[in-house]
Length: 186
Image (cartoon, rainbow, N blue to C red; front, side, top):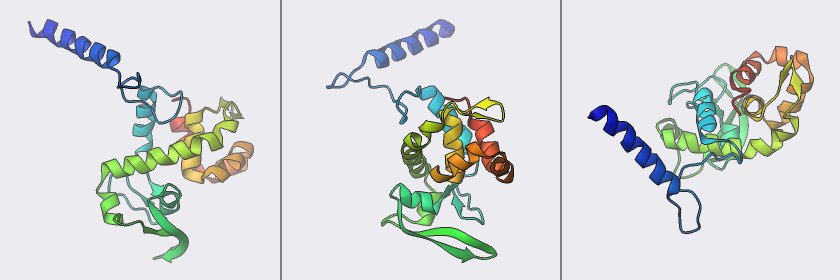
């Protein structure tokens, strides 16, 4: 009995969710924050980009599961007054003041907050890198997901140089690795 009931229940739930609409007639199913990207591909991209433990702190200033720079956290509204400092042996590390009531420890302990920062970052970067979609890099056609991976590592200003120059791609191996991991997801 259970092998038949479980699939029928799942079909019923999915059908109900698909037919459910809000007062405005929009689907109640969750959507991707990037227009035109199917949710399942967004989730794959998100899980690919979450490459660190939740409480990750790199010597260069990257934080959390997505390895976001404090500079980027300021760009998406979670911090303010971004500036570079010397932290231990690392020179030129981005730091910023957290917007109240946020804190570094609160960010590192919160999966929802880290996802929100990542989502905001990708929404902001998508239109900035879209002009490079379709470019060919090392024999591979660039997709939006691959370019978002590059922008995550190099910033939106670094994407043009990375796309145009093989020496830049070679010099910044982690950025190129991120492109290879994410390109083609969407």
